[in-house]
Structure formats: structure tokens, C-alpha cells
Image 1 (tube, one colour):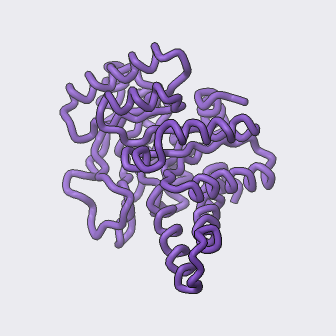
Image 2 (tube, one colour; image 1 turned 90 degrees about the vertical axis):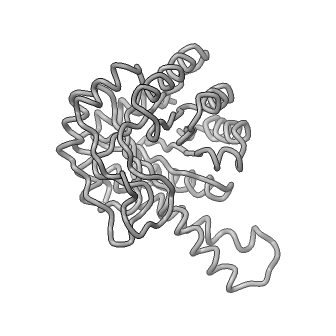
Amino acid sequence: MKTLREYIIWAEQEKIAIGHFNVATLEMVHAVVDGLKIIREKTGKDIPVVLGVAEGEQDWMGVHEMVALVKTFQSQGFPVFLNADHTFTVERVQKAIDAGFNMVIFDGAKISYEENVEKTKQVVAYARACGHDVLVEAELGYIGSGSDIKDTIPDGAGKTTLPEEAKKFVQDTGMDLLAPSVGNIHGMIRGGNPHIDSELVKKIRAVAGIPLVLHGGSGISDADITAGIKSGIVMIHVSTELRIAYRAALEESLSKTTDLAPYKYLPLARDAVRNVVISKLELFIHYK
């Protein structure tokens, strides 16, 4: 099986994007993996998925437990990888690296450029010395926070990343993946998410020299997603749409039963998440 680094190189060559799905429960994990299995059977393509756990999800699911679970899927031949998404301290990133994560994100979006560079460099140095291949991602530009539904774009969000700033940031840190601000917003805006500037994506990819990741993939139009991938996006984060599907299905399931056994009322939530995953993967690999 390819490493995540090798899959990213392959995805860029194929002009497709790898799906990154945030999970917070065991049934969400199985929903993502089930979606992967269905898409691989349907298309015959050797595509991977990345499970994302940000700080709250890491605390709830457990970093060592998630690593063990992902290694089980990998031992069965499924290319499932694990990312420490939106981790705000160097120490917590190091904990994820030590546990065996395939990828980590140091989130310095709210600190100064100089501090962001310094801490990202610390993470890169630690990852390089850990003894296993770990990809390091960092953000440049503020796109808001939270996998939720917002009434308006958050203050300060939406300011796009300048190509020359991206180039300098990559050179200053030595990181592997860059998450820029190109019109994307974390979460979903009730009135509709902004458009992705695919020309800006193309310019940033050309000067940055490393693969680009799109955060805030929920609520973005299919056309914008496709244009972004063609312009250089190689991984797309989806969280809010999964949470919406999970909660709506769970509420529906609970409204129809008084059964106390979770395995009887949780399948509808699992299946709802799986269906979103399938739809996104079809879009990301241009199968629709």
C-alpha cells in the first residue's frame, strides 16, 4: 500500500483530490471507511481517505485509540490515514506524532506570522526526527473556525492568501502541505458560502511548490470544488456536512423508537454520514 505522501503525489498527477473527513464517533469512522469501500468497488480506483480529528475529537476519541483503529484498517488493505487536524500547540502536535499519526496540522492562523513560522518549524523538525513518515501541514490566512452553521462570514475571515506570502511561508518553514485562504470558510454560511478563487489557487500552487489543501469543504458548490481541484487542490476537508447529516438522522431515528440499544438507533446516522462521504468522493475523483 502506498504511503499518504505517495498517494498525494499520485492524486496530483491524476488531477483528483483526496477526501479528508472529520470524525467524532466510532460509527462516523465506519461510515467513512464504508464509503471508501463502496467507491473503490464502484470505480476500481485505488483511492485513499484521511480521517481527521481536531483537538476536541482527539480528546473524545483518544489519539492512541484512533491510531490503533486506523492501523487495523490498513492491515486489511484499506488506505485509511489519520490526521491531527487543527492542533494549536507544538506539544499536542508532538503527542500525535509520537502516537503514530500519518499527518499533523499546526494551526497558527490566529498568531503572528513570526510565531507561526517558528512553531511550524519546530513541528517540522520533530516530524523529521520521529522515525516514521509524517506530513506536516500549516495554514496561512484566516478562514474562521468551527464546523458549524454561521449567519455571516466571521470578522477577519475571507482575506485571501497572497502567492508571494505563501512562497515565503513554505520556504521559512519547510512544511509539506499548505492550507491557504482562497475564498473558503470553515463551517457553512446560511446565505451560501463564498466562491473559491481557482485562479488564485493556481498561482499559489505554482509559487509555493508544495501540494495545497482546501479547508472548509462543506457548503462549497460542486463547480467550485471541481475548478479548485483542476487548479491545484489535492486534499479537501469535510466536517460540517457530516455533522449535519449525523444529527438529523439521529434525531429522526430517536423520534421513531424508544429502544435503548444504541446499535438499533445509530445505523441511520452512520448511513447518512456514509452517503455524504460517497457523494464527496465521487465529486473529488470526477466520477459523477
